Length: 395
Image (spheres, helix red, strand yellow):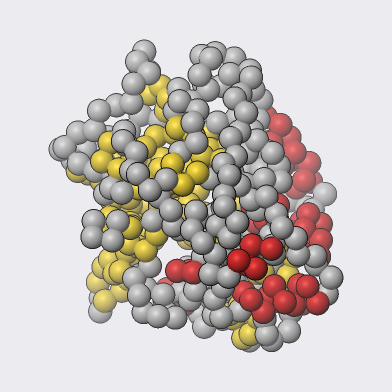
């Protein structure tokens, strides 16, 4: 659909699409079984060491009529359930997470500020071969986060799952009305905020506006948004490295040949460091991404690739089926140089996403920060070399 939908028609189409996408089917009793298309074997394909020009077969998750119940692990007081690490201040865990929209385009707005303080960052497609980020600031704060950009239809879904408050720039009228309708007083656009917590002049400029997450928490409380101790369990953290399905030392996501995210495993730190396309003279190169607040490389302990259904209403107007996806959907997990195949799902509409192995067990993440990229199910996959994976984004 290439014409922008009216606000009345948009929710109707969205509800019909969600209903179609969340139908529970029958089949193999193990809903996490990954079977390459066209193959009678349920075992994952063996990784090859030679480069390949063919896409990896698209796995299909078969769904059982009855899913195993979600497992929510216990965390000691003061431990952040989104990282498995102590919060910088235990009082931070008695508030709503501050969820912030951060721009990645235009390039002049890079390096971003504050992402290295986020517990989780979601990355997703916004049209025109570009991506945008939604950072969750819960266990830690940052005085400078941004540049801040506009909200998208998927944002209120994610904010409801993590029971946060959303700080964003401007948004198209239809999108803004959906955000406010779903989040109410937990939606904070630039036009409605003083400085602090959000300071700047024009959200569509490269320099843009920036947010102070602690000041955002304070301001939300001042206008009556209640803080409370939330149950944000859903992830599992273990120090011991699990045995992966195959090596995973490099993850490259291409939205176009001029729009590239590449994560490289750093064995010394045990983290994945981000490289992005950049312009050097007349050439397009890959350059390491840093945080403008401290000039340190942007590094995360875990990477997740979620394969999800995108809904395109217009070339730059998309939604993603997340909150109503109760059945297991394909996922990859990267930690400690290994890639594990598994699934993601949302058992409850106001609790965090859970991530599970093919056996239906909670995946053990490395304690630390997690970057989650949401790609479309028609994305093509290549394996250029041993342990290296390239995802060519497709809806």
